[in-house]
Image (cartoon, rainbow over all chains, first blue to last red; front, side, top):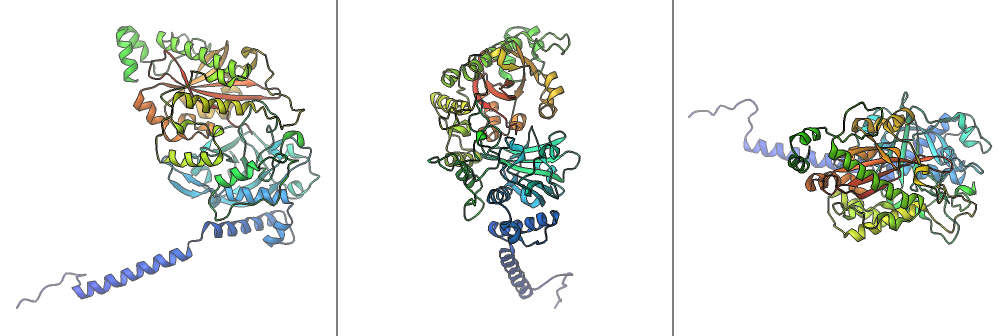
Length: 272
Length: 261
């Protein structure tokens, strides 16, 4: 009888079955490993928050780089700024059809300034924001996105290594504020809106804030502040509008953000 | 060139049709735009548009009458819940609408309901909040004329003084539009890319506008005006639809106050 010539790589049925079984097992194993190793947003939030606090402590040359120590060293309003903005940075960058891509937080390398409330300071661009360093690729990703769109009136509040955001007496904001040659992106189809700004000639240097309230023609309460002030609210019995809106707008985590800081004195511009 | 507009022009003769080949209507008031004679119909449409913008801004920003500003003036072509501005919705309603809009779900609404939504937004922008501090002064002084309230905002002015805005609108070939005698910026809107610099919260602009423009053969124009506030200037963007009537009328489909902070 003729012996069947087997081409190179040919396998008989049993061999094929065994190989498929092995491959299937491998796939299952890989899938299981992937499922286990893929962190949840909550885990990512915890990990990124800690890493960014370490980066902040490193930049500020604090003695302790322990994230818990650094966080507890922040005043409650600065804790609220940090917590809310880091959460908001989990927004996915969407393509033209609204399909989600990488998250903005994936491009944030360092936090270098955590700017809280400034009593008697009426310029909103000096408070309630993070000074950050972005990784490469963010500018291009945002320029190609449909939900974080290029806009106008950008501003970058530069960090200050000694003093500045962590000095309650600091007032030299004008020397740190850049408004010219700034590229800014705002979150469309969302209220409140994340705003991401970066220097045109050095896109690694940037600032992030959240605009909670739409522009008004009459400025009775919200005019210049009301940026990123997650914890502020109008006097009782007013509802905590910013906090509620934020948690609806930033739904990426298992639990809503509860502010460590709530203040009705720092809400309207006249209160500053 | 849109088929509906071309058909209308053919009825007026070859000469007018040739004029209409200019892709965007040129304003007769540009001043620095050269000697080109604007197409008569386009100029007429621009005059009507300018008059409607002036009427709207006078009622809303000067007289502070949101109802009068929109009464009978809202677009029917865009009468859809996706075009309800965020300021007219609670945060939960807004989130639900954003999710529905991204799924391209059309939810038609009556013209009256759409007008009410726009009126709510316009009222909120005036922010007559009685709980606010008593010492707060209105940003727009009442009883001034619209002419005194508007700041010249022609393409030349924007190019020179607001380069970050010019970056976003230059390629839209904006033209000057005389609103209450003051030059403002106007340009045709075809899709979200044309107005996304406003970072509008209105989900329909991003997810539904382009399809409606194509399907209903409407011309949409953005008019960017600058309003003088007590301490600074703010930009007001109004969006207008000709409802497929070749510029014979203009109906409001959106109002944007782009953030300046």
